[in-house]
Image (cartoon, rainbow, N blue to C red; front, side, top):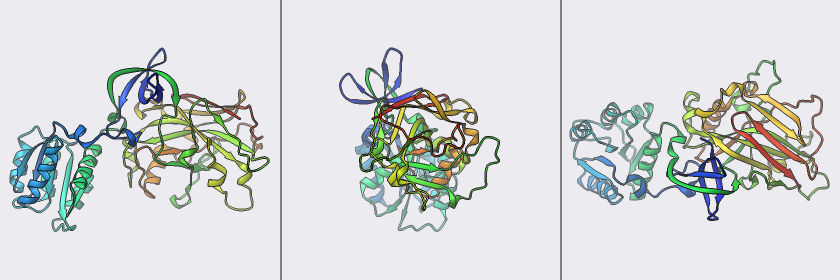
Length: 406
């Protein structure tokens, strides 16, 4: 599946999968994994679901069931833990919302019963003022609980946690993109994601044959590019005019696209949070990154058009073996940088895991993983880009991204 974002013949922006003949099959993005503007209303995702709602407080149970029913759920309301577990065992349940402190069975036991029935059954546990005498939340969180609701809460907060629970059970972020059966002609290719965050990684490559250095987490070099720096495929990198010679430099980079809320995620679970990979070109005005002190990352990398992205996103399962994937930067037809992902100091999933320990990466976040070494060693910095130059980035399994300098 080659996922693209494009302008169709109807002059609207769409998500789709690439087909032959300049056509695309449209995709729905109900969970907003690539674009929060496509996030569906709760009624679209909850309609027709069967929910178990459990609370020994009559008013609270009635309120939760009423809200979910209003958005299309069919609710079985339970007054205690025994009723809740019986309802779960009866089968056909798509969602469980339960208080953690009830007669007969606590929240953890209800969570465990739900997961025994189906290991991807969405569960929301509810607690009053964080009161958790049986440690239900701690125990369930260790086993994958993603949604917790604290009393008192508004209906909108209930819906927010229910949606979080539904997203948490996706097998992979790309599974959230659903074919609609519609087709459109592709009139203009756009960057395949409108980034929620655009994060760059500095100095992430070793020379081929070198042993990877042991760089502690606190020394991971991270910078942020403004989301306004994104440039569509085939666009033009604009040379800044605020200085006589900004000394433009560009390098191809593997770009990771995050599809699910990602915080404190262990490395072995990161693949599920990656909706796919695309090509990025990190453009830098080296004039603003001299050797007199720490690099001024933001100033040198933050100009408009300084981050071409595209042309498509490839889901992780459809990439070739990642360690063998080669990345190439070509300027006017000549290869200037080249490297295989095996020579990264931190690979894609390690980067996601490490960054998620610093901050939550929301859906639509893009991580530029760093550019491979120069082919002609000793030419650092390389000759600056000039108006009219063609910059091409190539990554095995994804394709080719071409832009001009103007």
